[in-house]
Image (cartoon, rainbow, N blue to C red; front, side, top):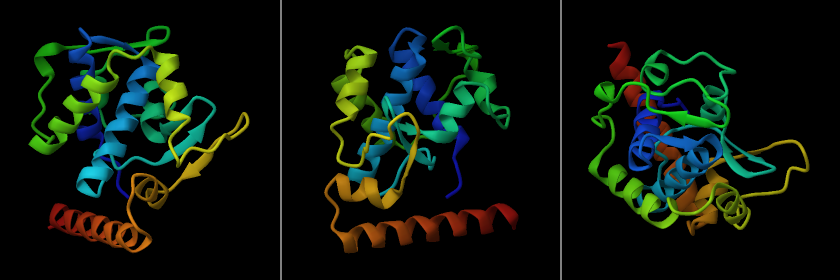
Length: 182
């Protein structure tokens, strides 16, 4: 799957804006994961198209986590909106650059719902909550990959519906790549 840096950045900025511009990295990471999880439940696909891993503090968006930590280079969009990590916090770097045009109304509604339900939860309590997600496995000081299938099954999809959803995602991404190259 092709990671969508623009949507992920805009979703991160959306949560940051709702939190007066600053959040602890781990809390932002959890809100982003929960939003993707809810998008799977409601839309049959994620928002970020990131890769997921189970880590000690719960499920994580792998590429986004690496962006937050400065471990990978972004395409320039993330760093134009989100500040480099300052201790354990991230902020919006330039409020005038923030817009949400890549996010659909349905994705914004999911973000609103996630923030309403989890925005008030303390960061480590939120981590503990994600340990209750069926797709999470304790990696014991390591990380374990999570597949889209794992998440779809955890949010209530049948085996057949999960496979159909994954096939649809692949078809949409192939079409998008074709249109980008044309």
